[in-house]
Length: 335
Image (cartoon, rainbow, N blue to C red; front, side, top):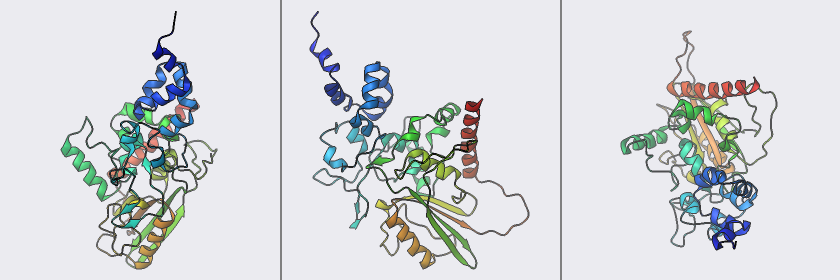
């Protein structure tokens, strides 16, 4: 029996790869791999598809690859909102500010699942999900602009999702945040504000992530993946969510360090409550933003010890809930 033309196409790896690259990211990651073993093998071994799924890095400028992938599916969902008339990404230029880092295309699946971890300026963030009203979505956006919050995380929407996200082999852990990837890691900029002055420290977080109840440390190199980014925000003791504290995630492309007053920028550094910035701290932050592409800024006011047990904030409770869920998942695997 003679093979149908469509059958010949689907059994030709080079042609099938082109077809699969026209699928949206979620379908390519989940549904397409359930079709058959041939499709699964191709998806997991094709460099182009693995780059489209943000599992492998691409060193090229994404603009040069736009014709290779379907602009109406994958690339349409990835491109930031700032586009020049010629179609090139203009993420690195905001009101004349040129970021020292290359333009990025953000991972659409991670943006939807972890919106507070990413800049608010991109097309790949859905305007409102099917399960929330426009008012709820606007409230979520406004909340994110004030300070980092765990509340919008998809994993916290139900116990079932939380269990699924916490799996050690969950695909989101191995994903790159963007293409080209962040190759300088993530830095923490900590500020302690007190009556006698401000103190600060800034350091790059080593990309070694010990899993809960496990002693081994796995070196992930300098390419920033979501697992390390997530662990830094949920477990680093220098990232504060207590009372009288502020934590923000900054992507340097959206924070012009040369601006004399950057507090009006979303992602801009905010002065302590009731105070103003120490110029030395502000200068150090500007240098950090220029050196690192992703900076977690965390400021806390030094409080006097009243002897009473400190009440945890809502954000601290959510962070503990996440850590406990991850710890419980690790314990279950050790049984």
